[in-house]
Image (cartoon, rainbow, N blue to C red):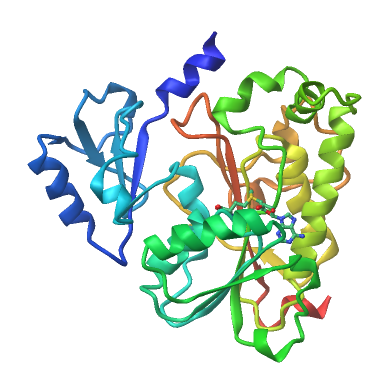
Length: 336
Ligand code: SAM
């Protein structure tokens, strides 16, 4: 089917771990193995086998043809390269914490975005990485050790139990929040979309099937609560919220509700949020999400343009969503 075919058309994205090497050196390495470096393109599906190019949006990303298997490649095993979907590289890029800053990765495991943050920060500063799931945190520790990250402190606890007033977190200015979501944008799961990923999971586990919209609403409530908590950190400058969901209910609707309930919080201007990426958020009037309820808080065209979306069938990535919040000038988000 078309949906299954989509898995095969997503390029193999290779993120270069700047803690260990450079984009140039990795490109040279692949060329020395007979790979052909071709001009940057926005049509990765036309790539010939054993060719690659520099991604046009992310300076630490290389693009290879779909189905290129690099899991046994020495550069992958050494942590010099990370195999990570392009869209999943957006959150750390948009957060853009400077070297030496203090960052929270609120839902960090298994850790690809944490290691990306450390790479962008050149191992200078501090990253507090929280997750509820001990097993997944162990994977994070392994992955970030292989990647040579030295500024990460892991903690197995709910982000909601992290006290924003704790002196330990007064230096936190950047928060990445990538909470649990429906996962409806993940291409290999798109066949579940007939009536929602959660419903399909219920059936697989022989559980009673719950109403997909109710499941999404529950997730949206959780996501909203997590954002509100992040906004309570007193010295916050930027908060990136991301999901791998294609549902407006977990994306624009959550953002609109946050803006409606936090008058001192705004969306970061498009100029700081992957400005050249073409697909932006959906304003209320363009809503086409059948699973979305008639929502109470609309998003203006201008706000929607500050958001980033990826559509699996159109953008050669998994489905994804990114929003970046910031306190309005002269205020702190926690004033609300
Ligand atoms: N950011 C991760 C990455 O790039 O590898 C993926 C995160 S995954 C989408 C969501 C994570 O949120 C899961 O690992 C889950 O255990 C964690 N989680 C769920 N509720 C949480 C909470 N209250 N506090 C911290 N982590 C939580």
